[in-house]
Image (cartoon, rainbow, N blue to C red; front, side):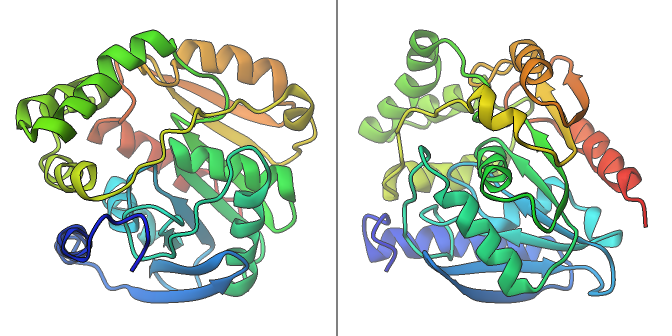
Length: 288
């Protein structure tokens, strides 16, 4: 059992929801398990194998089916590999890597090598953005371009405000199991209601040992060493990683920043319309 699940019963509840969401997507897919330096990594692959490769990396406390649901049409234009990030409530190994070194980058390159991919594009949301930037810090080899949606690791929001508006209701739900606190958390983080997120996080917050470590920021020196083209989508009303602040710093530190888009009125988790815009820009960016 992944050691970060608090019990076997809790793991089963969460993974049952994982399987339920995967079936609801109603797509043809392959379930792949790879061996990496940090443990087994599970991947859901969809799309014709001859299409250009795209790895999608979900956010914290997420899983591959959520990433596929967020961008539901990309498998029509790419061979999509939705990765279950290590030590998250999913089907990969419970190996919690450090956010302070390049371990996540080494892990992602292990995945790329095991999949035997060349010139792969990467798309990541939130914590998935940190994973991708760590991958670029580790090596730009084989990564053609990256897309970051409300990514961690560039800027952080006000810690006192986030403690009160985000982590306080989360902790109160974990203690009381009163759904009103979970709904309060979701209203501050999500741009629109999401019934599956309500069901999934209701179980994750109770049955999974989450990582509350402070999220670091990429250094200017590390950012300036990156040469891979970066497309950034920042959320205007994101309390965790404020969009205007993010775009300002990104333009200052990333010489390879290709485009930066501010998603107006978006909270940390984008709505379906903004996700569709991101899909279109990812699709249109590919040049054979």
